[in-house]
Length: 479
Image (cartoon, rainbow, N blue to C red; front, side, top):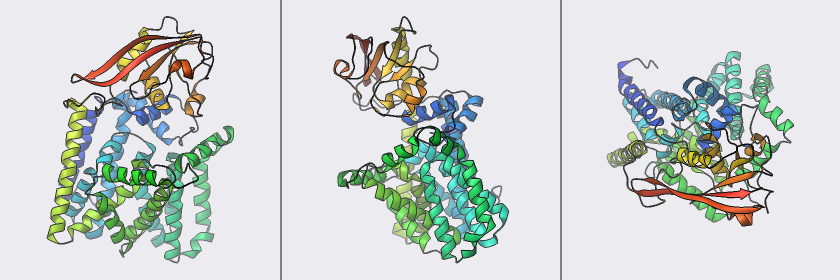
């Protein structure tokens, strides 16, 4: 496919415009919980981390070293990945019928799926897998056809990078094995090429293995608990997970993903068929996991990234009422996504108190400024929070100050590794928010608990958050 050809012009204009818009927007939106957490990875480089493999932190380090660790620099990598993912999806769909208009509409459907407009601006482990999944599929198909060692080595590198991105990338091995079996390429399983692939992949993910050996396999233990956390089925969590996916990916485009999976599975196109095997494995795993623990919508993003565009393409080949449905679904998604971007940039909606779309991303620079203003001696005093989601933003927005920020809770996590000294014996200024509050006197052992101040984070004359700063004198641990 030659992207410089005139037939691809509309597609290139669209994704270039969207990338430019995201770059403009990125500097004016505060970092969310996960975004701040992964920038902290970059500021604390390591072989791996407690909750995820290291590639997201390494990538952030490269880009923030060039563009700075502010909001803009923290988002450049994700925006580039969103651009490249659109190119890969376009190529996938274009190769089905060589129809540039239909491939462009499929990409529009991807951008009309709400969550991708967030994931293409926030660098997360899932975002990295967007960039890797389709090259893995394309390379696997090429191996089955030509069996060239260079392709095996490329597959090894791609799988290794996927393993450095997210632990669930291990699922990618299953559809590849199934594909080779269904294609009756049994000789692949005892060839030198597959041994080379395994060795290279293991070498690439060795930092994760070394880190876990050094840290009692804590990351593997955490992830097994994090994804499938309960021993019994929780139906309410399961249905909440499904509902979250329907809302996150556009309720009108959501069913198209399963239509796309069906059509891909029945297709004689090898790339589509292999994509369907990936889709079946991914959606089966996350559906199973959601039976035991409520699944976050972005966990299954790879499935919808593949099959909403594919489903949209095949719906274009259908009868006229279906075309009207697709036009409405994409239009609905693009309009709402545009409004959401406009709100993030211009903050014009006067939403009720504590219902703001900005409640997780607005005001943390102010909070840390006010908190630091109340410290008189950073050797004996420090700032503290009681929830990890507060910790990621508090530490990130505390970068320009000399004070320390502690997470005071009873769970093991990455923050325990980053805290090089103890908070015991210090006077802690505790940040309580409207959404995360602790009764400090009952939660911590302190000589005294004193409420210093309380203030509101205001936007458009409505409360986004309410912050209370309380002082724990001579902190001696949790009760």
